[in-house]
Length: 264
Image: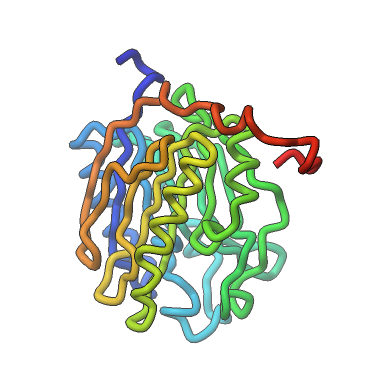
């Protein structure tokens, strides 16, 4: 298949801690694995670099902006050296506060996309400010990529907006854990499949590993079929080759915009 018509996507289902240095070493190992696998894109979970606030940090008061910036800069260098694009979850400083964000880093190390989590869940507002910008589709390797984060998958509107903006693949970094939340496994998997099928797009959901992980990382195709899935709980590296000619507007063309004038 010609370049631009296929994409080898790697899911890095990694554990995370509250230690940026330790997380950075893990990310570096998995970028190296992506290079060895000749992946075009490697996707990490929500806050893979910094650790998810409500689960791993007492508060955001001691977070260090300089340390985050330095670690992001190192990951950009790793991406450039490996010639692999990276979807990276991290918290980022914004006007004296913090956002729960995902960066899209091109294989030359340039940041070409940023998305700040719009739908905050439970204790999220104690740590993060909600994103205020509409989700955008970013160019990558001749295609367009959309970004969402974790709880966003419960809401169909941003996925529809990304599909209408031309995204062929929507990546959803997540941290969905909790011993009493195992019921989420089939529910979130169904959401991922629905968001893919109702928009005719690929959806890559990548969750953090760990004993209390609720939902394994997975990929759904434009028909809404789950075509790749990690094992639950285990740290794992999984690659899947995507046919980037498969996304389609078959469902989108049948929308009744006369009944739903917001265009979604």
